[in-house]
Image 1 (cartoon, helix red, strand yellow):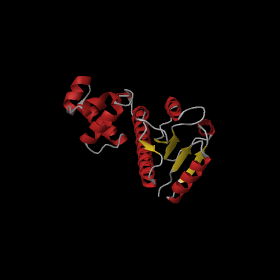
Image 2 (tube, rainbow, N blue to C red; image 1 turned 90 degrees about the horizontal axis):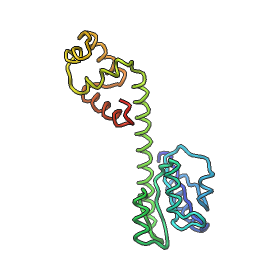
Image 3 (cartoon, rainbow, N blue to C red; image 1 turned 180 degrees about the vertical axis):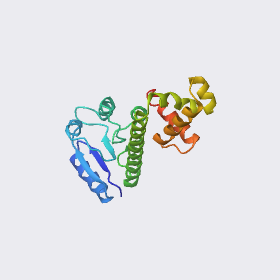
Image 4 (cartoon, rainbow, N blue to C red; image 1 turned 135 degrees about the vertical axis):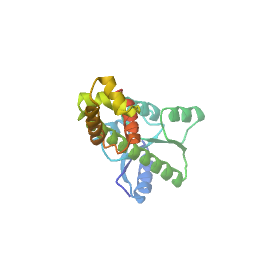
Length: 206
């Protein structure tokens, strides 16, 4: 199993111990907290993870804590557990981004399935962010002229058309086009179109 961590926040220490034992038996690193504040005070981890969170906590409720995590920009997937759930509460949790809402007593397998799903979601998100970071760095390495030409190439214009539009020689456009493909690691025009679309959707960087 690839490195991953499951955070469990519940103010019932017997529940914490039970869930820690269950999750550790599946090979997960498990960190337990008896309050929302204890979780917030802990060092931030960079390992893909999932948060198992009790809805009814002393002080801050689980739903309030979920909102606070989003406010802080913490996207860790949340699996809610509760012994006092109702439909409005579960709807509110799911709308706020929870991936599962389990009523106690729940089947161990249901929790394990939810946690596995949460970790995969977090791993995929981290991978996508890493790829986007690398793409931004490649784009930043391009010259202003290459950035000007790239969307024209991605739109399907031929070198001759681009040269006419920018008042450049066709040879110059051809050289820039080659540099663009190399710097962005695009093997085909289709690759370049996909890269251009991703960058365009990334806060309008293109």
